[in-house]
Length: 387
Image 1 (spheres, helix red, strand yellow):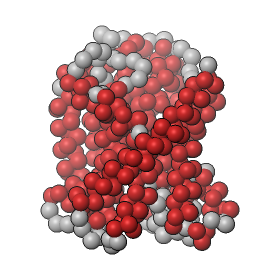
Image 2 (spheres, rainbow, N blue to C red):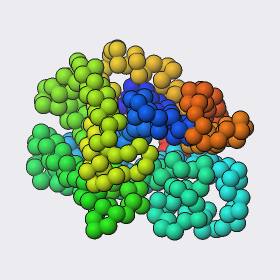
Image 3 (cartoon, helix red, strand yellow):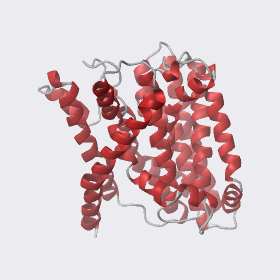
Image 4 (spheres, rainbow, N blue to C red):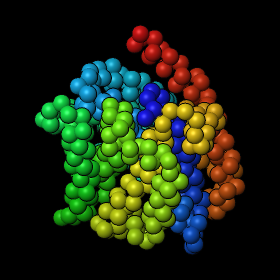
């Protein structure tokens, strides 16, 4: 299996970032509420969020998984946490300031609001002044709060999994099986938490808390285990599995597409109206996990060398879009509301494609500037500090 940076996963990140942008434009324009299959597909564009979660599981757990399997050194936790903070916080803080100044000036003197937002605590605000998930322009940041919680908890989860794996002795195969079993237990937290959301009474706020997303992170972490296992034992079960996936990427993507299509049916509940019941919520967990895992597997398990998947997802354009994808995520609601205000359009007034193109270009421009002037310089400084 490939080691080091995985260009194909940059392409997956780019696809997910623009999918969630299309989802939010479809919501603002009302396209997802239209009758027909196209509206149904648009209404489940939020599957991009589980894809992002699974991506984090793959990329961040890889070194921990390798250490757990081979007995090598684990990443240094202070350095790991510092890199994560430098990666996500400066850009996020910039967008928070911009959005608050544009649409929430009545609350800019509220220190508690600033503390809640800057520390990514909006998911845990039980009686906020804002309507919806966050102040205007920041609604998508609930998923970043979940990501940040995963970043902080990952060293603890990885240490527990490694301790469980070491009980199998020095055999790599047995350690890998134990890691996967531990991750299955971690994924089960999502389903137990979902029951807690609905019983004894429905508490929708808990859907925004990290345990609800454990299954998505676990799916990516399982791929990281398979990658490390295949590298340690190329002729073992994981190596054969990886070669099988790499030989038939279309089959895996077809399964992802079928799971997405099923998720677009009423089995996951009504469109854009929240979860209808516990079975709809559980169905969404299963189907979105399948989409994320089957989409990522061919890109994560690519062998070295040229391949159609690498040319498709790891080409220069897709790598660039992957690099600026965080900015696309951060700026999209600022671009959406800015465009609608500039053009004088009302929400749910239609024009999905006519709005998607200019909003995507504005978002991409903002993301590129943020990457060039903020993200990339900070990453360079961070690399210099590490050396």
